[in-house]
Image (cartoon, rainbow, N blue to C red; front, side):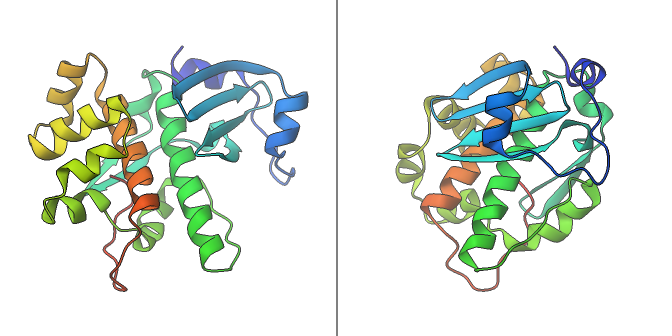
Amino acid sequence: MTLQELKEITQTPEQGIKMPTAKNLRETGKAVAEKQIGNDTWIAAYQDGYALYRAYGHSTVFSIHTCGAYLYVSNSISSYLPEQYFEKEPWYIRLALEGEDRLYRNQQAKEQERTVSYSAISEEWEVMGTMEENPLEYLVEKENQKEILHCLTDRQKRAVSLCTFQQKTRKEAAGELGITSPAVSAILSQAARRLRKKYPPQNQTEKAVAAV
């Protein structure tokens, strides 16, 4: 099922309605699609228009219908992916990117002892990116490739090796992995979040990066 098809069979949450909790969705929601992305990563879409993303023992809930365009930033180069880019791709690709970003920023907010409400509007990605550091760049520069790969899943290791160490494009990596380019981006995003958790930024002046 594609993202477009998922949006067509799910409701659009009304504005002003309180978002359900992860526990409430699991217990009372009607799941229309589920995907196990990795050993510790899982996502589900519900009839009422909400998605539940769980990774590293943490969960986040967000509206499916606000997942549109996406700003991808790597090596200080920004790539704007319009909503149409994800419409024909598997439904979970764009939602996984959303979930990873939200979990990471929620963790950052907790560490800074403050509460932040994040909108899914695509224009805000660049602003929020100032909170992040690119762990792939940092560790590659330190020539710690073995250390990078040690904490990643096999699929993440393969994607990172192709796109970072072998300098292949997303399209080339997708061809070798037998998946789509957006799927490669999603895997790299998950790898980056895992690395950020293991290797938090050391520099107080962080580089603007919205996603790997």
